[in-house]
Image 1 (cartoon, helix red, strand yellow):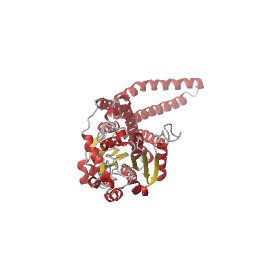
Image 2 (cartoon, one colour; image 1 turned 120 degrees about the vertical axis):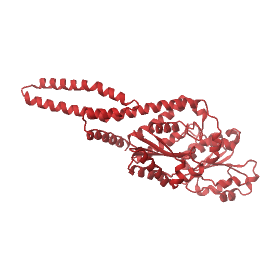
Image 3 (cartoon, helix red, strand yellow; image 1 turned 90 degrees about the horizontal axis):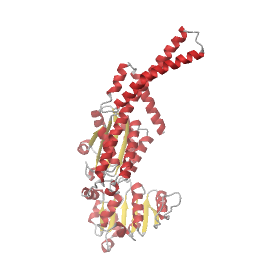
Image 4 (spheres, helix red, strand yellow; image 1 turned 180 degrees about the vertical axis):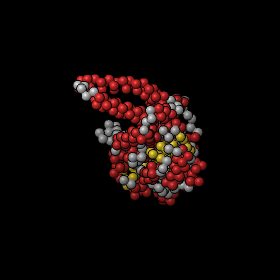
Length: 460
């Protein structure tokens, strides 16, 4: 295993850099394809969220891999390599595994313990599988990360330490008032219908807003979300259980008109430019915002930002964005359960490393047994030539005896070498086995290629 991750996140880079480095879905796909085409990388996966961009790869050379992955990130993010490099972090092999498992558990999130990252890891794996850039190593890694994250949330109280960015953002806007009390009866406008926007709409509906409007470029998607939320608690049998909230969908062109009546605006789209400029907000609210009993609440969860930062300066408006949340989250207390989650992560990293090292020797063991089978077949053929008078029963008994002897001789060393290979530094046992039995390197490589082919075929 030569796992390498190069990335930047809210912990290593200011929001202004993360905002410029944000990747669209098309850019993520192109990044993966170009990474796989690069010489040091055999597999690739990208984890891109509103506060992190990470590129994972299976590389054959560490320094060349770091240089290549850093260059590719800079090229596809549109940020100069010299400017991006000070904010990049690099993790290799077990440290890379530890990093992803920590991310999956919410330990590296802006809001510690939040569970939405699991869906984003699942999406990253799905994209790698769709593009066939994720092979055996990254499939195993990301699937195990999902299991570790779920285990952390089910076995510990990490959920008490964290929450979604949506809830955290609404709490900042509520300024100490319970969100349900603050939001009750208000008119809310949610711009976007992706995973984060859907979570925002659901959270607002459950908080008791009086009316919920969902705007999206693809109206059909907004209509499905509005219908699901408008349904009663039992749902409609297809969509998830609803909230009974008065929810309706509108096209994006209706946003300016809907803004005028909104008390809460949440925006999270994949747009590369501003969705709500300061001028548009001024035009929509004019002097009426300042006359309201409470400021109009704006929550921007997009990266790059959807709402003009200049909205801070407009009377009657209050804006909370990713940068604001990052500052607030830095002061948030961590729960005691975090230590328990860290213990889970450490144990799972050790188990994953042992499993990968054991799997690494499997092609060598398979090649050894194939060589032994060839030797047995050759000797049995020679015996047939020297003892042509053997009947079928005698020949079958001799064949079974010879094969049993060879199997017994190979059983203990092959089992033991797998156990030894799972220990730290155990990679050398595969090489020792190849040298001792003079195994053909091409035969071992053929087994490895067959394994990768089976993995890729399983993704198709």
